[in-house]
Structure formats: C-alpha cells, structure tokens
Length: 475
Image (cartoon, rainbow, N blue to C red):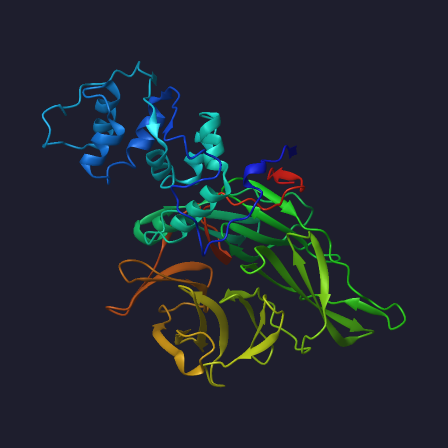
C-alpha cells in the first residue's frame, strides 16, 4: 500500500550534533506564541504529565497566563502538583467526564517544543493530526533529530524496545517487548509484530542491525539472494532495498553460496545509511572468491569494493562500533570495515584459543566479546578504548544456570540497578554481579528466542525524498 511522501521527514537526522532543540526552521522566529487548537481532555492529560518536572514559577509564567483558568485546574490536577507559594493556585476542582473538548490558550513555542520532545513516538504520531502547526513542528528534521538524541540517551530505556525472532513447531516470526519493562518489571508482555515480508512463502527473517530506530531486516527466500528491508516499526514504515547483482562468471560455473553476511550502519560523514553485503562465490564445488558490495540509501544503489582479504566469515550479522562494522571469521579473528574510507582491518582479540563459542556484541557504545567456555561460564570482554589492545577488559564472568543447555548471546545491557541483561539459549536472563546470581526473565506470550535486537523508538523514516513510502501490512 503506497502513501504520499511526508517531505518534512525525508532528511535523515544525525545523532551526534543536534541543533538547539528550541530552534526549528519550520517555525518563524517571529512566532513567539504558537496558536493552539481545542484539544481533547485525554491529550491534555498526556501533555500535562510531562510538565510535572518543570519549576512552578516557569509553569505559572508560561503555561498559566490567566489565573484560575479551567486549563490551570486541569493541568494541575493531572500532574498532581500541590502549589504552595501562590494563593491564586487553588485546589483543583472536579472535572466532569462530559468535558471531552477544552479550549487551550496560545502557548510559547519554546514550551510546546520542550514538552513534545519528551513524548513517546506513539503519542507524537497522534499529535501530528492536532493542527498544521504541530504537524510542521513534529515532522521537521531538527525535531526528529533532537527527539532521537533524547530518546537514545534516556538511561531508563523508556523509549527502547527489544525485538526477537522466534521459531516453534507451528509458527515463526517476530515479537516485541518494552526494554524498560524487561529490565524493571517482574513480568513483561511480548507482542506479535507485522513486519515486511511476513507473508512471503517460507519466509525466514534475520536481523541485520539497528541504527537510530531503523531495523535492517533480511528475509531468506530459500532461493537466490535475501530480500532486504529498512524498517521503522515505531512509525510502521519500510523500504525494500533493490536487489544486489553479483558478478558471476558463467565460464567458470560461478554461483553464490549460502551464508551471506550483512552489516548495517549509519555513515555520519556522508549522512547516509549503508548496508554491507559479503557474498561467497563458488566455482564448481568449492569457494573461489568472496564479493563485497555496499548499498547506499542516498543513491539507492549497490556498488562493489575489491580489497576484501577473502576470509570466510561466521554466519552472523556485523556489530557497528566507532563507525566500523565488525565480523568474526571462521578462525575467530575480528575483522572490520571503516565506512568512511572503506578500508579493512583486523582488531586484536582478547581471548585465547581455549575459548569455545565466541560471540560479538556491543556493551554501551563499546565493542564486546562473549567467550563461552564449555558449559561452565562466559567471560564478557569490553574494549574500553577502541583500537587499543591493552584496553580489553574482562568486565564480568557469568556462570551457566544449573542443569541448563545453551550458551550466552548478545544483547548485553546493564540496567540502572547494575543487573546485566543477556540471552541464554532461547530465553532472556538477568545477572546480578553483586551476589553473582542469575535468573530467567518472565515474559508472557513468549516463544523460544533465536536472536534479539535492541532498538530505539524514533521518528526516522527509512527513505529519502523521491522514494515510495510504504506502511508494513505484512507484504
């Protein structure tokens, strides 16, 4: 299903250098007061909950220009604030459920922007239909960029989700749950997701990576190359990438083998999202070469690069750290490609030959390695200073749960309470380094988890101006 493009959000935001969140090009500098429409009470209450942290003096001077107004009583009641300094702020009166629509005063753009930037994506999508001025503000590239920065840096992970692929004897697909609930609540609920390519015959989705709220998804068609999608599940929009054409010689009976490897990253220098594909090519019955191609979202095209060292990689997606994509080869060496100059390098590894199963991950913003030893424990190493071998630090060692089969996988995440989230086998676990305990996380509507991906909920769109916009209805 195709829709008209939303031109205001087709420029992709850079996460690293946002402008002043109170200055937006879509609103004139002369518009110090933003006209406000009449809003439903439920929207007012949603907004008002975000005002609770502001100082009373600022609330009085900016939000309540008229004392004892009906709006004043609604907002104070919704935020449960008990003003004490000013007698004019009386105790809120009861609000009738019949007051479904309430008049709003004209509010300073500065305050409206500050409030909206703290709202979740789901609310912002609804608020875009409130008025043309709100649509222009919420859709502006600067707003999208600043909202992304604030959401990604939220230490409570309230704007993050955890998506996982599941497979059972009767079904397979993708589920999603709140990351903050997974970390803090005793029980978390998972929800089934529609995703691009869901209703393909014999579809088999794989996570390539997540950047700025965009998920790169590969759908294995069991014949030919994978179909690739850039997908933002928060705004339900996706883009199918053009097919990659490999340089295969018929004279030497060359054909692509299984075991394609991909990596997804944001190139900050080019302001571009890129996918790197690594394709083994066989001649008759054995591997003869490896072809590497890079997709650019800006150009919407693939191109080949030729200086790959020819190593066979383990079948796992790349991890992006410091502007570079990282893979493990079959000798368990860590190799990387720099998206800025497209040069390959090898990263010194921290582990010895005695390590069993090795998995790459990201801990915070640093490269991490999980070294699983037999069925006893896993060592988690983190490179605290990128490119410096001596900076590899063994952050913690986690013992395997008793009488359990499996190994530890990413993601790796530390909560505010110091607990470590890890995937063990097909379930999620939390490790407490204070008492060296580990326990399984209780998730309802759960299914055996094959792989998982953490993402930030954002307004970033997976296409540039001129692309066709699609919403994911499973097709």
